[in-house]
Length: 207
Image (cartoon, rainbow, N blue to C red; front, side, top):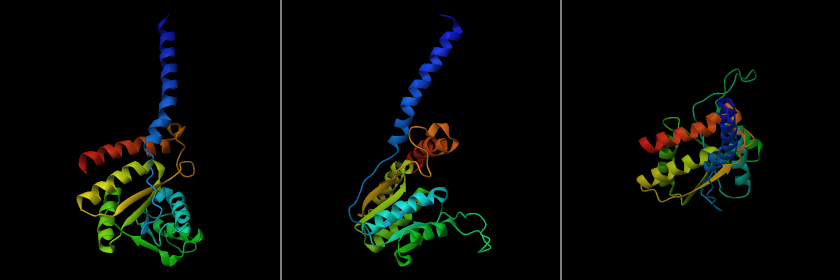
């Protein structure tokens, strides 16, 4: 067997293995811990994926899972609005999408953490959960973000001795995030899947 043929076979086998393994790597990141009832629904900040997250949160709210929805303001702004003559904050777009989906404006509140990132949202929510004496909190976020989110919140709530029970609901990939089967064919997929593994490793080391 000549050298070129050996290389071709190795490349072919590697490609087959990767096609089989890549979806598993993506699906490992997706976890769910449903709660039938909660004191509040928290929608994790995510300027590029607010549509899928708010739609999921509205769906859960309208099913009667919780009386309020909390949005986190990541500080990012959207494009220029000719009507408003400004760049509205992404959290404003998220609020509008919730209202358009049937959530009353009075049931929506906005939380602004001291920094942008899951760890800051977890710390801020731990304080709020204690102050409000919440028994249960249901988190909504994109599928690939769920494992790190739940890990971070449970770690922070335990460290601060907050007894609130935590649940999490995943937005199924496919709308604003790539599918588990083909994420590796898109730059956004590498950002959301491979990037999530990197972030999780950083969180486990530093937090």
